[in-house]
Length: 200
Image 1: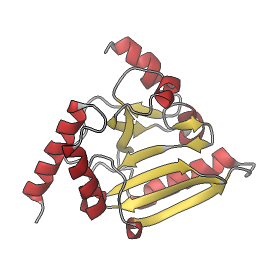
Image 2: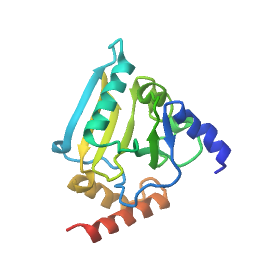
Image 3: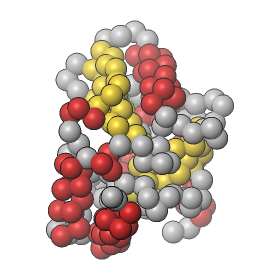
């Protein structure tokens, strides 16, 4: 993967949204993302209707408030963000839904626009229509955003690595090569082995 190509197609669009992708630095303890958590693990969230005249602004305000209150963002304004492993553009990424996304360590810059410029790149469909997964560096919280029929929902999930549903989903992914991606399957297996060795 060429550095210049990755910068042009992936890193620069995210910088335009105020998100700096940091090289390496993803903790080995970072829980792979899979749906299946229990409803009671949701401990915060909000919903904004599409017809709100301040849609992007309200989404940005709500996201930052939830991200800071939930502990997603650490003291260095860093967290993990699910992004493609390759060098394709955001438009190509949206068409290739079968491609695996993995955690990348990122830093929120002073000027940012997660729900506008971010959602128009790798964090959604277009401005005001986000779709992303974020994880605290210590895996204590997932922050998820998605589009629904009438608006956008953003919510925080507490301690996903302790969710029986998430653990079942990861165990299934370790057995079934759903994504046809041996590297991802190895990562999931390694995480499960590490979790089993350290959990009480």
